[in-house]
Image (cartoon, rainbow, N blue to C red; front, top):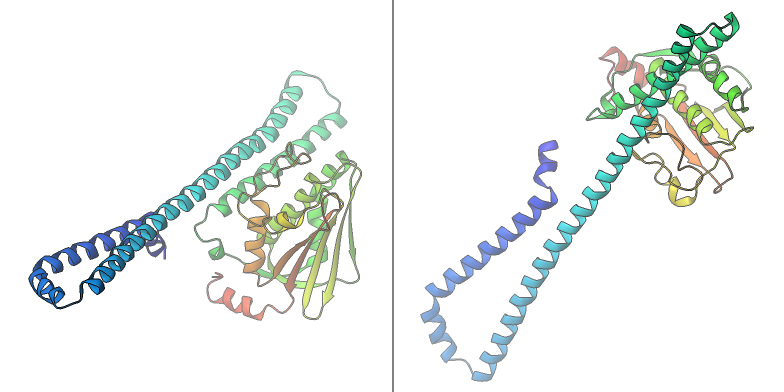
Length: 328
C-alpha cells in the first residue's frame, strides 16, 4: 500500500503526464515525417478553404491541450507544495509543544527534588512534594504513550487485550489520579450514573482515552468550572459523556479536532500546552473497540461534550482476541 501511495505521489504523477505528452508529440512528429508525402498528395485534393480551416483548428487544439497540461502541472506542484508547507508547520508546532510539555513536568520534578535535598521540610510538605512529582511523572508517561501510539504507521493495528470491566469503577479509578490537578485549579470533576455497566475493553488503551479527555477538559477550562462524566445505557451500547464548561469550539474547529497534530489556535488557547495527539489517538482506540466518539459544542465559550459509544456485546472483539488479539 505504501509503495502504491508513493507511485501516485503528485510529483510522480506530474512527471508521468509530461513524459506521456512528450511521447505523444514524438510519435506524432515521427508519423508526420513518415507520411508527409502521402499527406501532401491528400491535401492537394482538398479545397484550399477547407484545408486552411482544418489547419487552424488543429493548431488551436494542440495549443489548448498543451496549455491545459502545463496548467495541470503547475496546479499539481502548487497543491503538493501547499500540503508539504502545512505538514511542516504542523510538525514544527508539534516539536515545539512536545518540548515544552516535556520540560514543564521535568522542571517541576527537579525543583521539588532539589528542595527536598537542600532544605528542611516538614513531613506534610514532603508528602505534598511526592504527590506532585507522581502527578508530573504520570503526565510525562501519558505524553510518551501518546507519542509512541501516534508514531505507529498503522494505528489500527495496535495490540489489544480485552477483558470485561465495570466501566463506572474503572472511571472512578481514573478520576482519582486527576483529583489533585482539579483541586489545584479549583475545578470539580463529578461522575453520574444510574447503574454499573460492564464492557469488554483493553484497560491500558481505554485508560489512555479517559486520561486524554479528562486532561483535555482540565486544560481548556477556566478555574472554578465543572467537568461532568455521565454513564448510561442506550440499547446495547454504553454511552459515556464528558461535559465541560471550557472554551468550546466553533463549527469549523469541530471538523478538525480529531486530526493529528491539530490544536485550536486563538487568543484563549495560545498559551495552553498540548501536542495535538490526544484526541487523534483516542479516536483510533475507540474505533478499535468498535465504538464511536463524537464532539459537540454550541460555540466559543459554551463548553464541549465528547460522547463515547462502546458496545456492551463484544463477541466479535473477543473472538478476535482469541485468534490473536489484533484488531485491523
